[in-house]
Length: 403
Image (cartoon, rainbow, N blue to C red; front, side, top):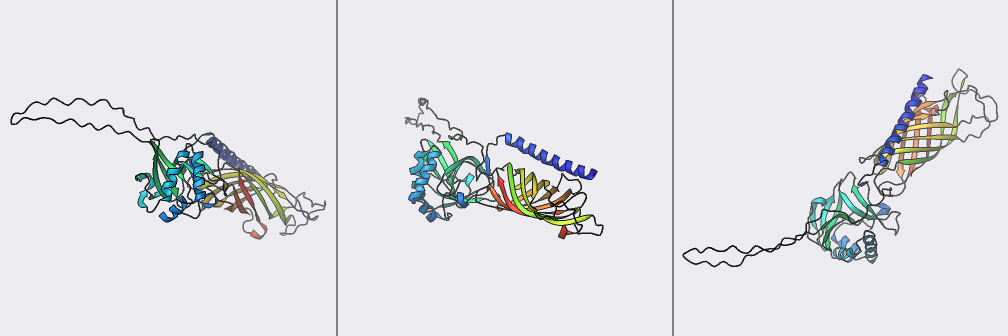
C-alpha cells in the first residue's frame, strides 16, 4: 500500500512540475519563433525549385505574380512587387555561394546558397491552410537540423536594400534582411597648384570643403509590426497543450475481491490456481489531456492525465473505468513522433493499480513545421506481471490534437 501511494505521488508531482514549467515559459515572450520543417501543403510554390530555369518559370507565372503582390502588400512593401517579379522572371543564370548569411551579391543577381540552422528571418510567406490562402510569419528562425538550399537576391528601393530568400523546397518568399542605404561622403578634389622652378613657391592650402550632410546607416530594423505570438500551423514552437482521443482494449489479471459482473452475479475465477483472480479483455474509450515542452533538437517532454472508459457490455463481465497518469519522452524524426515513458494505470483503485511501460508512435496528419494532429498508436505492458504478456497488456489508437 505504501508503494502505491509513493508511486502515485511521484507521478502526479512530475505532471504538476511539467505543467508549471511550461506555463512559466509560455508567459515569457521569445523574440523569434523556430521553424523546423518546410514544404508540403504550406509551400508557396510547387514543384520544388531546382535551377535558374525553374526560377524563371516561377517569375513568369501570372498566378505567382498575383500571389507575390498579395504577400508583399501584407508585409507593407507592395511597391517591391515589380522589382521582385522582374528579378525572378529574368533569372537566366545563378552564382554559387556558401552560407546565405555571408552572400553579398549585386542588386538583381541570383545566388544559390544554404540557409543554415539558426538563420533569423524578418518574415516568410506561406499557405497556412494549403490551397490558395496566403499569409506571412514574422520574426522567425530556421531551426531544422540541416541547411536548406535557397536562392538569394537583393532589391534596392526607397533608399533601402531588401535581401530576399526563396527556399528551393517550397518557394516561400522570405525577407532575410532590410537595411537603409548609407550615403557616401562627397569626394573632394583640390584645385591645381602652380609651381615655379627651380624655386619652390609656398602653396596656400586648398579651401576646406564645405560640410557635407552624411546620413548615418540605420541599424537593421524591421518596418513591420511584430506578429502576435500565437502559434500557427507551421510555426516551430512547441504547442503546450494536447488532447488524446483513443479507442482500444486492455487485458489484465485482477483480484476478484468484492467485484460483481454487470448483471450483479459473482465474478468467476479463470486464471491461476488460487481461485481469487480473473482476467478479461475490456474494450476502452480513452480521453487524455496533456502538456508538453518541445526543444529545438526535436526532443519533447510531456505529461498527461485521463480516463479509460470501459465499454464492456456482456452481463458476465466486470465494467470498471480506469484513471491514468502518463509521463513521456518523445523524439520527432522527419515529423514522426516516437515516444516512451511511465504510465500509472488505474490510480483510483488500490487493488488493481499498476505502473506500466508506455510506448507510442504518432504520424502527422497534414504538413507544416508542427502539425496540429497526429494519428497515435499507443501500448502498455504492466510491470507486475511482465513475464505474462498474454494477460498483461493494453493498447489503443486514435488522434493526438495540439491546441
